[in-house]
Amino acid sequence: MRTVQFREAIAEAMSEEMRRDESVFLLGEEVAEYNGAYKASKGMLDEFGAKRVIDTPIAEVGFTGIAIGSAMNGNRPIVEYMTFNFSLVTIDQIINNAAKMRQMSGGQFNIPIVFRGPTASAGQLAATHSQAFENWYANTPGLKVVVPSNPYDAKGLLKAAIRDDDPVIFMESEQMYGDKGEIPEGEYILPIGVADIKRAGDACTVVSFGKIIKEAYKAADILAEEGINIEVIDLRTVRPLDFDTIIESVKKTNRLVILEEAWPFASVSSEITYQVQERAFDFLDAPIERITTADTPAPFSPVLLEEWLPNANDVVKAVKKTIQ
Image 1: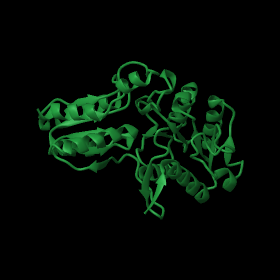
Image 2: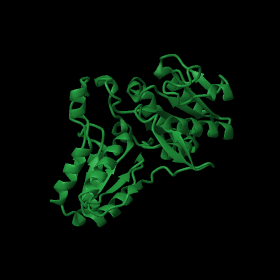
Image 3: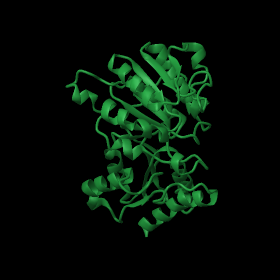
Image 4: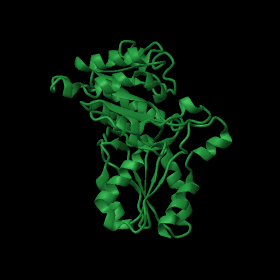
């Protein structure tokens, strides 16, 4: 095993797949000459050249459409958005073309494409640059939505996403690119749609994904000091969502808390809550608790932002509420 940063895991996954398959290429704003806005494509231009690592104009609609057309013709593009907030200007391309093309063409066209970049808040970036879009894209049949929380998962899942014959939304975080973690020396791939139990316990199940899961780990440490051992599940993939792992955990702990960095209405936690009460109602000893951001646009003030975002204390309180 060796230790790498999250951004290095992303770059390794893309580079390994580009060496393996000449149809894979990367395009987006500042991915080439600048080595990526967050240095997640560092060194790739030097290795693969300007025909496979392509700097684009600030025109998401244009380069997204070009990439989808390229995928229809047998290539495997990776489209990087500087932030998924900018994907809103091209959401029509993603949903009405990439996600639906296989069905609309009667299976004549696959769209093997990856749309990747940061999601959710990243400090003082204010309302229009701090939105989480996992549930938006997960609402679309035809798309897969992956949200890794650490370098190991990021590399293994990105390689799987690039090889997938369907469009994949791959969501990262500006605040995770410097995170370090261990990955194997050799090649490995992680299956899309399989959650991972990061911490075993029996007092309560806590489900989360993406960078906000770090608050669940902090809460687990706090609760462990009081003799309360929670089970922390990292979804890793929002669509398809691994309900079976959640259900089996709830059958053991009889309690569920869901932590999500998104607005509460029609969120991923809303769907999990419905599925668990539908499939494991008799195993619940307390109502399901869910923790989200406040139901407002993200504030710019750091004091207000701290209140807006979920934190470890919120998780501790929710777990204790289910136990009591």
